[in-house]
Image (cartoon, rainbow, N blue to C red; front, side, top):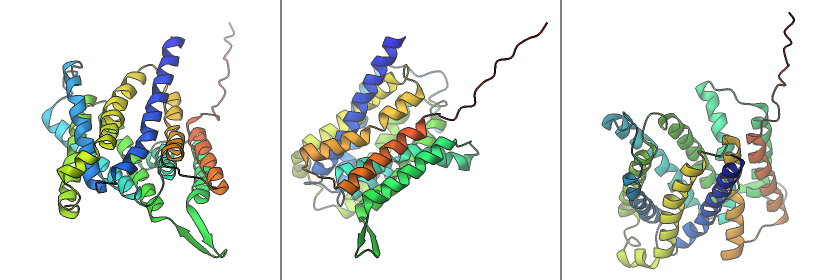
Length: 304
């Protein structure tokens, strides 16, 4: 069992690395395409790459009821579209490293959204959220002459996307037990691609051409095949043997890989202030997943 857990943790680490480096691909893809055109190509390719898995995984009885599947896929697909669109647009004005760390805040936002659903939020989540907010301030907010506060518009867009990623996690969590996960993923990716192409045809007609798609084939292939297709499959397989707490902590390392990818491939740099901010955000993400304040169970002694 320990060997299976270690293998699962290593697989999730690979998933985090794939998703982290995807921020680099997302930035490079916009050298030729607009954010909506790139997302349309990316999610369409990701959905198509998952189709062969339909031959390997059979759904449980009642998990493919057409109306429920359509409703669930549309709601998940629309939220996915909003989150992906804000993130991709934000990458026009911010770095891959910044985007990775800010996106990772969804790990903390998820339990906070749970408050609206009547769920209990633990103390470590509040403490982790506080660290993350301080880190976010150091990473994104700058001061001019010690008085005026400014925040990069790209960072602000990516922060908005983090709320939609968190909402997407909540929605998928509710649908996962009712619907076939693979079919739900494929249809929601198709819906996200369709919405992205519709917006691209309206606002990005000049850049959405076959020649530009061909020029951007490498970033599209990485973000579509690896980030969506391969990483999604590995995540599903690995989380069968990895405890939820392990999975969440390992997945938060996506932000670290995004920063490494930005530094290595895009020559992005972090100031000392930004590095402190990133460190606090990562610490907050990890702290929010650690149950450090569990009540100790007292042993009951039966007296006969």
